[in-house]
Length: 143
Image 1 (spheres, rainbow, N blue to C red):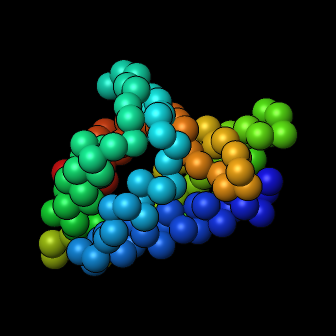
Image 2: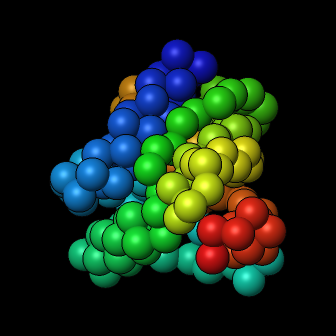
């Protein structure tokens, strides 16, 4: 399972960086996720469906990242916590690079914990838990 989950996040990283360049196929992004999912952050817990509305929200999110100067997103580390033969938690360390006016680029490390299910040989994220992204960006003067 580890090899395929790592490949999932390599693909995620690649698609995220394509989106930062304005070139993203939302069908490919949506293919990283299960048909339904949950997300938890300090703002609360949300559940959703992998549908056209999800693709639209993701596209808006990528536009927001471009607008605040996000230049790159890199997987720094992946550690898996197996649950059973079909499920795991992927603890993914990310490093985001942001352009800042009149200052050097800022690199910010953060972690997201993804719930992954592998059905029919293909892993997909069905949930995630993240920290307070807005507070972290504000702390570093990005927003």
